[in-house]
Structure formats: structure tokens, C-alpha cells
Length: 296
Image (cartoon, rainbow, N blue to C red; front, side, top):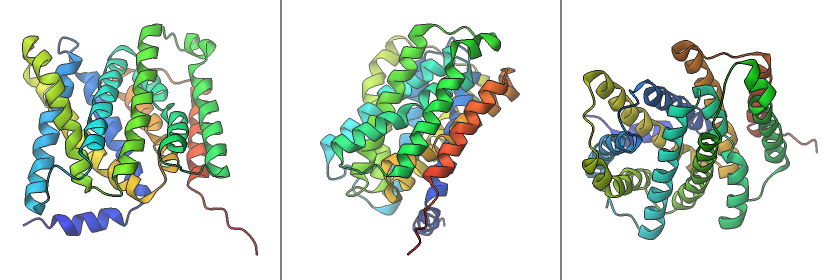
């Protein structure tokens, strides 16, 4: 029989590595979304993802005999709503933009996290975090420069860029609520509210506009559910151990993972400007996770 508590203790000991794993699994989720036929609506993908995630999470809660409804129901519901809005925006951006570009835009959210964490949970932003965010943001701007995009023959419609940025804002707000909830709620209770709220919101529109996916798409849809569940688990565990602003900069690594999948599976072009921007993102991640030892 699987000892869930023992597995959790091992995962908790990983600390910052939890967030690296989260970035990796979320990048696999984006790959699955990109591989699905455009005929399957985005809201239906989020709906399927929610069913899979809810089944997995609820079985874990039942196994651990934990009250699935939690303590702070309003904030848990808000977390679910913010996560749903973020995921819908992100899925639309992934479908309509190159995978590497959509991932980069999504990862502007650490800037918003820094603002929201200061506003809502009184987190202090250290010098390392400020430097890391500035370097990471510079890298993102280099990648999104219009000259850079023309060099790799990429045309981007403004509406999808706007939706991608909306996704990053909702993601930042969701991160902050998860960080606040992590002090009082079980990890799996927090995770459960995301798919639960998504199902309630998306069920009517999904059934009214139902499109039956083929077997190939169904495999990728299952992948979305599994990889998102893994990503959410590692993310929530990571946020329990680190300040939200520091945790967000570690997740810049998804830019690299997304770029790799874009090259391998979709023949996306990566040039020197993109590499420079990506290296700056990596540098920001390293700075944010490096302790400065002061001489005494």
C-alpha cells in the first residue's frame, strides 16, 4: 500500500527543487495543449483537466481522511476562480502563439507577484529578488522585441498577447492566495478547489458546446490532467517553504523547458537574441536562489 505521508515528507525535504519539478511538469502540460487539435475548445480542455485532477486529489484526501472543504472557504474558492481564469487564458495563448513565446509572456507574472505579495501578504522584497526580477524581465523584453520576432519570422496578434498577459496577472494572484492558504490549509485541499471551481464554472458551457475528441487528442488530454496535477502538487509544496516572490523567479525555468519543446515538436526557431534573453532569465533564477554570505 502506498504511504502518502512518507512520500509527502520526502517531497517537503526537496524545498526549492519542488518548484523546478513544478516548472518541468507545467511545461509538459503546455506541450499537451499545443498538440491537441484546434477543433476541441479550450474550455473543454480545462474541463477535462479538472475532472482528472479532482478525481486524483479527492482520492488522496479520502485516503488521508482530511476534511476536503478546508477552513477558509472564501479564499479557497477565490483561489479556484483565479486559477480557472489563468488556465483558460494560458491555454488560449498556447494555442495561438508559438510555444516558446507564449511561455515567455506567461512568465512576466513574477513582476505582478512582487506587487501583489507586498499588497496582500506583506512580504518583503530582498535585494536579491529585485536584482533577479530586473534581470529576468530584461531577458523577457529582449525575447519579445519586435525586431527579434521578425528575425525568426513570427507574427503575433495583439489580442493573444493581451490574453497571455491576463493569464500572467491571474497566475500571480493565484500564487499569492496559495501562499496565504498554505499556512492554514492542507496542500491537497488547496489543490482540490482549483478543479472543483473549474468544473462548476465550465460544466454548462462545455455541455452546451460539446465536441467529442478523437483518441489521439484524448491521450494528450489525459496528459494535461496528469501533468497539471503533478505541477500543482510540487508548486503548492514549494510555496509552503519559500516566499512567493522567490518561488516565482525559480519558475522562470519553464521558459527553457517550453523553448525546448517548441524546437523539438513544432520546429520553432531559436536565434541568438532568444538565447541571450533566456540566459538572462536563468541568471535571474540563479541569483534569486543563491544565499549571500556576509562576512562578520
